[in-house]
Length: 84
Image (cartoon, rainbow, N blue to C red; front, side, top):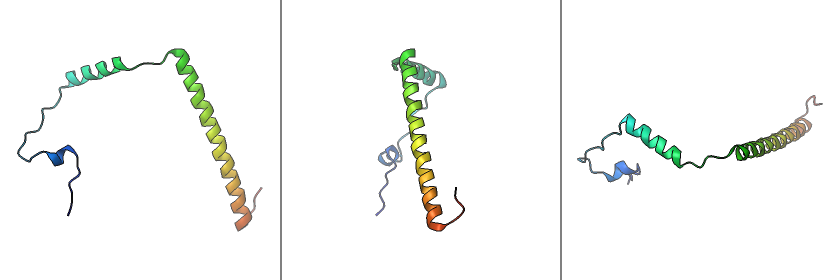
């Protein structure tokens, strides 16, 4: 037996009217209201977060590049080939 799991549409009877769409002006006002609730980082926080992310990305690039070189060397030794 199939179960309808499409969220809200599965719960609504077929005769019920659809809800009215939001006007673009109301949508814009809601966006602005939500953006006012956001706690924006200070310049100092933003710089420190950016540095942390860049250092993390560089470390991850180093790990991936090291593993790639290691696996490449291993595959070349196992299957032969002209390696460095």
